[in-house]
Image (cartoon, rainbow, N blue to C red; front, side):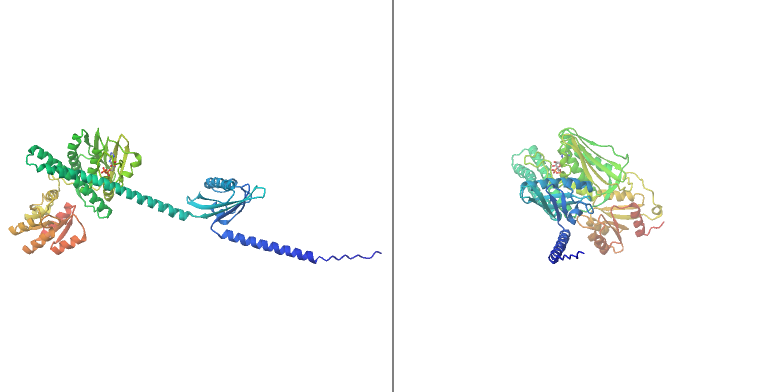
Length: 541
Ligand code: ADP
């Protein structure tokens, strides 16, 4: 038989080589794992594409940004991948392909800013570097993309640029304001100084003198209104402007405004219309009369100023809980891009030196601020060359229906049976006095009037007949605090009720320490006034 042939091959070397290979593979895998761990842990986006734009590798940040987590991206182009995610990314993928092409063409590292809008509407800004790699024959091999999220930095930068632009604009506006204001002040000042000189001429004709005096008075008023505007704006900006409410008869107020501006309108050959009132009767409301008048005056003055021919109409409507005022003109109109701008301080449609209309550019910003203080809004509708319509709203707070003429109150029976009493009312404002008088018409009470604190003291000195004093606090010559003190020295048992437009506690405390027995705030309500009078005079039903 044949024997058995044993072939023994020494494979030690092969085995060793194999082991080496396994080890090397393990090492390589370990390194790759580590590399992945690194690239996945950094917040920058990383992506590697082949020469045809197919994705070979992308880190977590990149996948997260494009909402591609869990998608098998390998071997897909940007365009293909855009189908696997939110469609909002499509423009970003297209932009990315364009900028890839820039890097390929440049043949070296290319940097740029890429903006990506996310599905939540957030704007992400990336500083992206793209490095192209080529085969020795020049063919495209791969593109390494890395992008850093600079959204926060960009946002801060944008804010800084905006703040800088705003500061520059404000600076420009202030400079132009100073030019305007100095022109606005100099014009009336020149007239005042110039015409005053003429008045000194001994030979001047009386008619001429009177004409010059008119110009001086008009220029002084103009000057005063500019100064008032500047002070108003400063007070508004300092947050010091307060609302002082009182009862206003709106229809009469508007009629008065109409009469006041009718002369100017007629001189300019313009028609001034006051729209029919929504109520036939008187319409008493509670608001700040001075501010309301100032707003309407500013709007009417502007309407007359910017209208060469046609008409100016104003009026109001009652709309639910609001009073809606409007001032309309057929003037030059305002371009739409200026509709918001003109409410800003110093803003005028015409800002060149050659401007033909005077003004400081403060009127509308004051008016708007006042409307907002009163709890309303102001806006406009206007078309260039066709005219403008300014609107503003204020809350409709009904006043007590007070008819100054004729007795419209219900009689208070308590007063009918009591002894006649004498009330001293110290009040410098004629309208406020008339109102109190109307309130007390049927009260069986004699009313004595004092125009200021000193007069009130004098009256108390000269007669013992006064039974009660209603003392206004803010009065010329002598205020209510001082007058009360002096009256209490003369007649310690005479009761004084303080009345004031300010409801601040300091005033109340001051009134009590001056000797007042009670305090009543304006706008005064008839019921409250009568009940206080009854209480302090000891009148019972
Ligand atoms: P002023 O009238 O002192 O310039 P305003 O703040 O009252 O300041 O107005 C700002 C600007 O708004 C005016 O300069 C003008 O360009 C524009 N404007 C205001 N009212 C009217 C109007 N009725 N018609 C046309 N333009 C107007």
